Image (tube, rainbow, N blue to C red; front, top):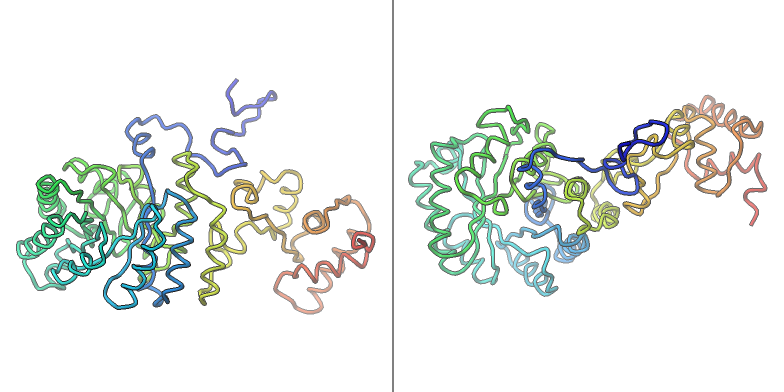
Length: 432
């Protein structure tokens, strides 16, 4: 009998849906993909792409965000920072003073000598160097030739390596680039420099406009798997490949997962997905997938509910229906869902949010929630169960429906309002 089948022949896929933890990918027959997923990790760019896409953070806010990332655990390997203003440089000093191994503080610069000097002055050990790689950028942004752009990139990168600074070449707009005519020859030159100086050169694979496609069959230039496999074939190690996507077409998480599956070790994300235009890949969503794919405990998912608390204090409004950490993520309003959860939470919950996130599921009472929602509300808030056939329960539900009809109300009842309706018919449950 399979592990996921009970003695009555019912199949629950316990190896994939343990409920006490996030869903797993399951057994992967492709040995190469399984090996890829064993090496994945996360990097952050909230203090760089997130900051430029929303608003400037204060020094103290940067520290608070950095502490969140550190509390998530060793799976978040690094965080990118700007170095251009005195405030930026003060942030770097503060973050380095924590002495954390992870996340490592990594500079982000353009491919200029003056920018590189900022990295050297800050004593950072690694820098992301912008190496825009599509002809759209080289021709229209830089008014340059391919040869001149590559020469300029290599000059700064070699100088960085000669000072012992590890480089991550940011291949901006790769999903609109000539992969074999420009990208791969450039990457091979980078690998030669890395070997010459015995200093790592990594790649940041940027789907800058969010036009990438996550499907194996999607051809170049848009196919993310095709790009990753081509760069691996060119000699780039998995651990030196990072994918950085944008969400313009709503595929950012899918593209990051595809990058993991096909051989890029790192997913470069921001907290809450804040970033340029439609945003970046949400780190908290990838953190859940990370656990599900790697079966690893080196990330503390109970830190995730603190993320909206920190950002809402900063004035950011987290969408109610935001995955994993939105207020509605584990809130039931529909009567059929409430009835299912009342019988067994696994019916309408992919995992136990209390065990995984330290965040309980909740109930919102509306005219469509039915008596089951009221029972669940009483169970959660009063610690008591009542029978669905209890006439007092029917009376509570009837009054709630009448309240919505008479007032024209559209929002669910608050917990305090629900308590008043319940108290009228179950006063004994409120006595301490």
